[in-house]
Image (cartoon, rainbow, N blue to C red; front, side, top):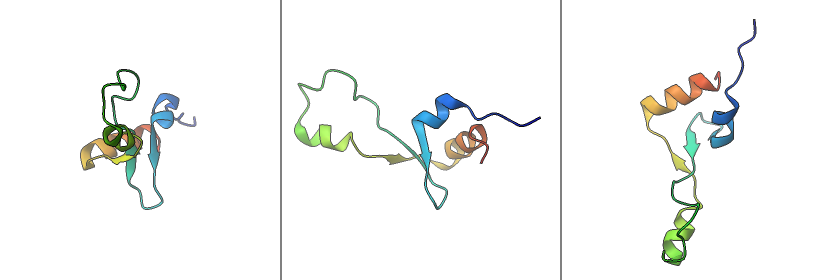
Length: 63
């Protein structure tokens, strides 16, 4: 039987061509009026995940 991808994980993470796992930073939902513009711009970037966590994410995505 074919294994299914965890859809919740596939929507939150992305894998680069070289195999790095990227995620979005936390804290983007509300309360941004008091944050500086620099901080808000920084929250738009993707962040690389460390080794052991990346391995677990790839396993859930069947890579």
